[in-house]
Each structure stands twice: as structure tokens, then as C-alpha cells.
Length: 397
Image 1: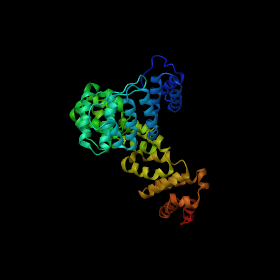
Image 2: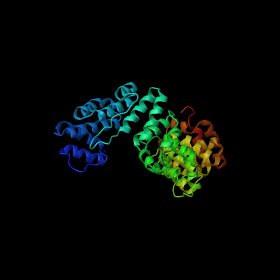
Image 3: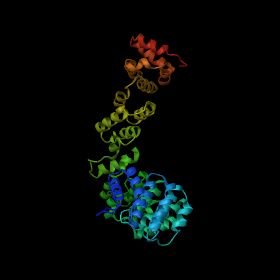
Image 4: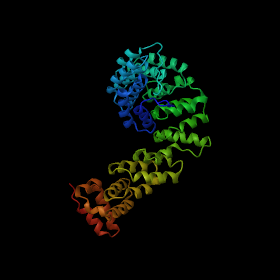
């Protein structure tokens, strides 16, 4: 959306633009629809329809776009913006034939224009490239992308397309890196940092291989590397450290971010322990508390395998209920840590939640083979009560 410097004459439209600036898209959508039917200015009506179409695309509702794209065409001097919106909807719907019928498979396109809706001819070329890829016309798509980047190398839409297609291995991004001026690298990654992380990583890796040690690439990587899997995040962390950048650690940032799934945060912390044990330990403890019961066993095994030094923190954070304690104890038995497992079981049975456990839950968390080993361990500690509990659970639940 382009900044508005004066009133459009439509209170609904102006209010909708403000709601967009405040990230209140649902409310804005309703007011834009009102403006389409109430404004006396054809430019406002066209822009309102374009905004509705754009929001519908963002909401993943491309099947509703066609009527608003048609309204944009009817209110505009050219049909370019309507074509862009409808072609984009076709791409989202997987209708590459429809998109190519609108945009053509080759040749120049007319730049769309709107006072308030952000649009560019680069978006039209990007939609065409995506449609050609979907049609499996890869050579044509690559030729179109190279040609477009030669003339429009500083455009968000085309680099978003490179990242998106690289993410699913439709193209090799190294073929397009000549179009990315080093001085513009941070700007471009700033625009596309929300794109597919794997695609962004492939672009950055291609740039790194061209100029190893380029601090501009490292700066760009910090914009998205926290979204990478733990292994790739660790690669960039080491490169940052080698360059003397100690204040940024994308992997540990991933482990600490609340918007990342707790399981992924645990995995990141388990790998990130190689970089900073204290920070990784705190991040792991914070994330383990948020894990679902069903996730505990797998992630505890992974922690024991890759970051055993954090096992104590995992156990303390995980064992907040009897079910969770017995689940953790079972993994410890699997790994031959009977004494530690016994301690965890004792603590778990002392929790108030133990009284609410059914025999079936007990058996699911701690199978009979593990219970028998733990009962023997309890007897070695002269703990007849715990041994009796473990041996009294019905095998069939």
C-alpha cells in the first residue's frame, strides 16, 4: 500500500487505509467493500476493489477475487491491475492456463497504476514466471525470470519468486545472482525475509560461495536464519562467529522465540548448546515446559543423543505431572539410567496428579518391562511401597 498524503474524499476508504496501516485487515476489508459502492470517485472505487482483491489473496481466498478484479478493470483506464490480481488468483488456484491466458507466455506487460494500492509490473512478470513453472515450461520460466531481473533487479516481487521457486527446487537460484547488486543485498533480503526460509538460504548460500566471508551476506542472513532448521542455523552461526560477530546467534534466537513451536525450540537449543551452554540451557528449559505430553519421549531421546549435557534441565522442566514424569522415566530406563529413572518415578508418584492416573495411563507411560526393572531398583533402595505400586498395575491396563 502506498502512503496517502491527502483525503480521498471517501471516509470509509480513508479509514480502511488506516486500519491496514494498523494491521487490522479484517476490518479494513469490510470498509473497502463499502467504499466500492459509496464513493463517487472512480479512482477510489478501483483502488478499494483492488485492496479487497489483494486482501482476499492474502487470506488464501483466491476464488473470490475474480469479481473484484473485474471491478478494477471497469473503473480503471487500463486493465493491467485487474489482470495482475486475477492472474495472481489463478496462480494460487493452480490454474496456470488461466494465468497465461491473462498475461500471455511472453512479451512486454503494461505496468499497473494505482494511487493507494502497491503494485508494479514486476508483480506481473513474477506471476507469469510462476505460471510457466506450474505448466512445467521451465526453460521459458527461467528465460523470463532472467530477462525481468535484468531490467527490474531491485524489485521485491521477483526476488520473492526466486526464493519461492528455489525453496521447492523448481530453479537453481545461483543462475540469477548476477542480477543482485551487492550494495542492494540488505534491502532485497529485507523485502523478502518473510519468504520460504529454505529458498532464502539457497540464495544466501550461493552468494556466500561466490564471496566467502562477505559480511553483507552475513548481515542479510540474520534477517531470516532463525527460521532455518537447526543444522543450517548452526552453519550460519559458525560463520558469524568466524567473522567476529558474537552478538547474533540465529540458532539460539530460534530456541528463544515464542513464535516458534516448542518442539523446534528444543531441537534448536539442543544443537545450540555447542555455541553457548548457559543460553541453550535456559532456552530449552523454557520450551520443554510448553511441550505436549505426546512430544516428550521423542524429544527427550533426541536431547540425550545430541545434547546429553542438557538432560538434567530437560528432566526438571518436563516432569510437571505424573504422566510426564513416568514418560521421562521410561526413556531413562530405555537408555540404561535406572537409578535416575527411579528418582524421577518417585518424584512423579508424589505429585497430586498421581491419584488421578488410570491403570491404562500408567501402563502407556511406563510399560511392564520398565516397571519390573524399576521395581527391582526400588527394592534395592528398600522402597517397598514404590515397588508394590509398580508391580500392582494391571499389565493390560
